[in-house]
Image (cartoon, rainbow, N blue to C red; front, side, top):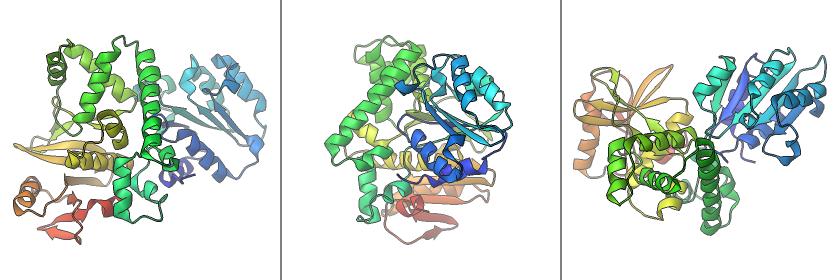
Amino acid sequence: MIPRETYINKLLEYKDKQLIKIITGVRRAGKSTLFELYQEKLNVPKKQIQNINLEDPVFADLSDWKKLYDYINKKIVPNKQNYIFIDEVQNIKDFQKAVDGLFIKKNVDLYLTGSNSRMQSGEWATLLSGRYIEIHIFPLSFKEYYSCFNTLNKEEAFVKYLENSSFPYTVQLNNKKQTDEYLSGIYNTIVLKDIIENKKIRDVGHLDKIIRFMADNIGNITSVKKISDTISSDGFKILPMTVQSYLQALVDSYILYKTQRYDIKGKKLLQTLDKYYLVDIGLRYNLLGNRKVDLGRILENIVYLELLRRGYKVYIGKFNDKEIDFIAENYEGIKYYQVAQTVRDENTLSRELFPLNSIKDHYPKFLLTRDIDPKISHNGITQLNVVDWLLE
């Protein structure tokens, strides 16, 4: 198994704290495997660990919250710390009642997962009243992915990472055909089970068109009206409010990530023209075909997800009429990022540096490219090879 050290360390940080640990993320990102890896770190007798996957038919009899609670409660070892892991807890109606009963026990450390669109962050907050910490898991970072391919150099591995997939299981597959079939299965499960069934969506054709449109427009400023007009021009009438509903369903199921724009000069979030990024570039190729185009936006998508993995809140920057690809903010402060496939051409370099040079504060500024050059400083703006940055 691939060691997911970032997430393991986060879980260890909160081990035995009086907080419910909730792991969220897209299906097949590795939540159940993360539990297995973490349980190996606990160093306690197996009888003090309970592992319940509510999508496993073995647990089909746990059909309501009371049965779930009674099943777990009977197996709790008295006077010892017990570690309870419940996968896909939202499959049980009123699950929070069972969780509440377990949470109040002094010798229970409770871990949950949720992946489908029934449960959003706001719903966790409502049902569990601030007694939890949410750890969001993504498919593999490039650093994790590269650790599986010791025979490749980093550039070869990065091309493989872009063209195949970052979903963990794909590293075990032998060829592109198997990867495509696996990704199709993930896509159909998320769309059919997590979105259409749970959100009661009737028009599958419209939903599919919106997903493909968004996959083709990662990193582009997008409006609900533009999507509606584009799809309607193909002879399929769809209202903007329906597009908005479908987009929210895709965000809730973690296929898409929505990023707002931030006016740096006015110091405020803008309420229109957001950008969306896809959870996995391999999924984009699976939906659209193996087009060797838009490599700059594909690179931008990779960088965006990596910034989220590293714990940043990420915005699109607007400064007057110029755009900064990403403003990354955490407890340490702000960093600015521009992303480009190459800046070997002087005009391209000047264009990419101009928005960063326009910002007069003293926060760090970075230009990430595929150019294989040593670290370069452009009047305080650090240019880095993106593959090296991903491996930091």
